[in-house]
Amino acid sequence: MQDILTFIMTREGFRRPRQTHTAEADREFYDTAAPLAAKIHAARQQLARWRHCLPRREAVDG
Image (cartoon, rainbow, N blue to C red; front, side):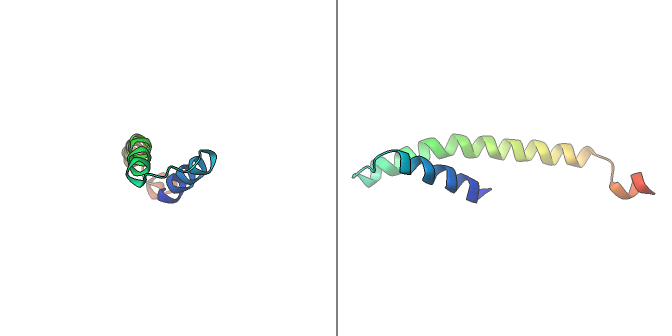
């Protein structure tokens, strides 16, 4: 999951010209990455809850 986030952020960096001020670039990166990471985390938690409620495969096959 982290690799996907890194890929998206790197691709966006290629589209925009590089900023010379690194503190500004870091702030912009985290302002963009934090909401996306929160959404991904929430989706993974929801998926885990959903999978936890499913019947076990052995119980269904048996």
